[in-house]
Image (cartoon, rainbow, N blue to C red; front, side, top):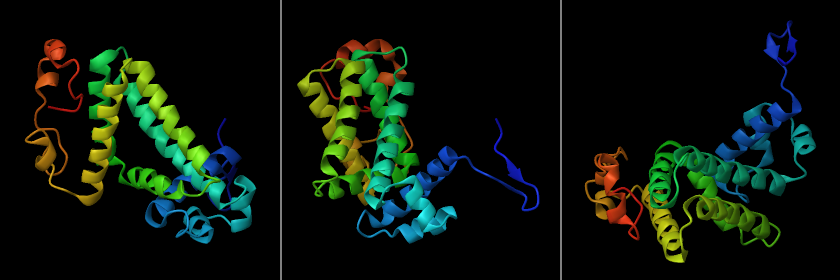
Length: 210
């Protein structure tokens, strides 16, 4: 059903769910820059075009809104992993996730910063259990789809964290990835993607683009 409109104002009224989603998107932009403690709810309300009292009708407090943005960020990674691994399992699925995560970093820098801000905010004992639960959810998804063992998962997430650092600090990609990725993050070569029949040669090795 279409949202009701206000003909006189020429605007479209949002439902509560639509407004909540809009607030989360605005909060992502603000929290990505300032983190939990350095971001004002006034700035978020101004960005989305609502009053602060209305903001707190949607979210109990600033911490609840921050957690909603972290949940949103982890959820977008999970969506990318599910799409990338449709019909795959094992090493091919993990390799597809590696490509999907690099694409995430290249296209969603604000969500990367939200992830990093979440680790900082986890110092707060009120937030740590929730943030840990988002991580555990992502971890469980990767384990379920790939069936990887402890070493596989450790290597996968460790290299993912390295990619976070490379993206955050704008480090030269060739320092860690050779000629696989260009300076702007575009994929130059991946011998495994070029010849998927070679998957068997890479079982037990790093899943990231070669």
